[in-house]
Image (cartoon, rainbow, N blue to C red; front, side, top):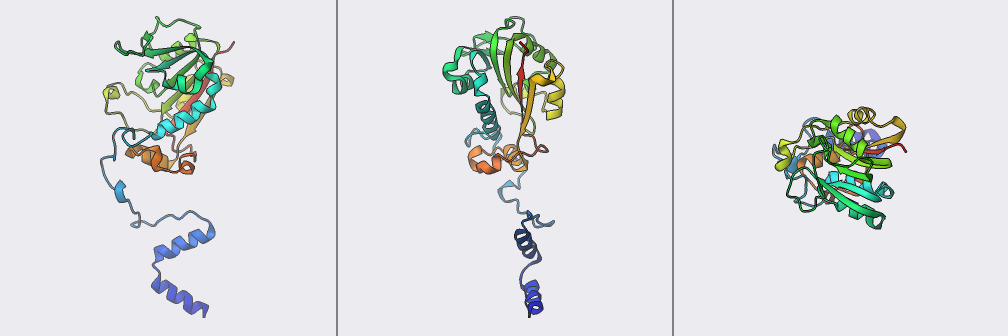
Length: 249
């Protein structure tokens, strides 16, 4: 009788459905066979958004950036330097910040207290900052080693640099597209930073997975994925690389 039921099932239920049911019963993630993938709205050669998801909600890389900074919030205190504005300094440092400085590469930014380029920044004082918040900036600087030398120089002894850089990413279409020089991997970032900071004073991490990377490239926002989907970390799909670097006392 069982043999008859199995025979009927094979005739009535498509092979792809049988494979999927078998995978679910065995607790194995189902992999659709060739020709069975359903791309839906993602079957397109232009992304859903070219603005990193800002026009749809919170960009996925910003979700990861904020997770990183929230974990390191105790480092954001004293005199803090941030790039472009002091949004993260205020959000995560709060009352622990005694002086907030903003560095911008061009004249005209009303938030900037210092105008300069990290790769050529003799006007930034040495041993001055308890914390540097540097998010999504190093990829815009061709001479990264000069920038890292500046970062080390301007931190106070015991000061902390909290840095994020893009891994898997589109290139921006705004004013910064002509400055976008690099995307990184954890290995490249580790090798660069260890030229300036000793190994015991630098911590690295990665955020992202294949779903997050695909969604980010399409310009989807954080709100369009589940938290448990975003929080899975697969080092083969590095959307964001983070660095916590401490200048020795």
